[in-house]
Amino acid sequence: MRALRVVVIIGVVLGALLAGADRWAVGYAENRLAERVQQAGQGQVGGAEVEIHGFPFLTQALSRDLDRVDLKLTDVEATADGRKTRLSRLDASFHGVKIDGNYSGGTADRAEGTALITYADLTAASQSDGVTLTYGGTPGKVKVTAKVDVLGRKLTRSVVSSVTLVDAPDSKGGKGGKSGKIVRVRADQVPGEGVPGIEGMIRKKTDFDRRLEDGLPAGLQLSALTSDEAGVHLTLGGTNVALAGS
Image 1 (tube, rainbow, N blue to C red):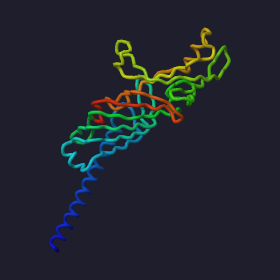
Image 2 (cartoon, rainbow, N blue to C red; image 1 turned 45 degrees about the vertical axis):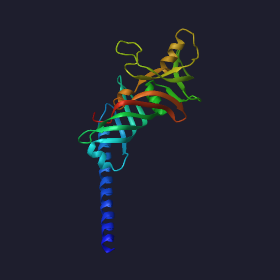
Image 3 (tube, rainbow, N blue to C red; image 1 turned 135 degrees about the vertical axis):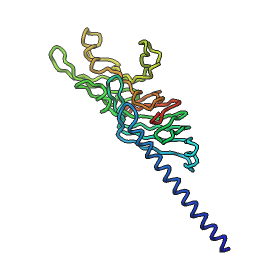
């Protein structure tokens, strides 16, 4: 009985040591990937958190195949066409991840996620002076308030606009969607609509397009959007998606 007790104690100790080593290893890998994510890409990232799922981790590490990796980013600066758009947060899950040799990145078989653009950041993205965007009262709608100069007078006007996801022009200027998606804000109606010069003047302030995909992990594409009191919510997905370093 004494010998059996010793064997059990040794087994428990070894198990604890192995579990501790496994948790240390997964923590190291998560930190390594988070650092690489913040360094990679065309835009800037304020913060990155990585969570690697599955136990034991060391078994996955030896094969360099991870079942699932969750990525949480904050303050993501997406730059496209010389214009910057800030995403308050981006959460994504990567499945079937093939990790690089030094854990500097990898590629996932598929990924899906969500992102949020606050109204303050959407206002900044409009790059138009005297314009403020807020919730439009129903999903997919935003309220755009703009100051316009009409015949020497400064007027403030508000319009309800639709925020939609449309195909970006391809390299030949068509609408084949070869270049991804564009977030589009368009006023449903404007004061003075139909009056020569007035409508165009207001729409120049209220209507705009923004590309975002150049600031996202390669292979992750926009698929849908909606809006609520918090801001504009984006749905993303893709296959063969890069998790930094790839």
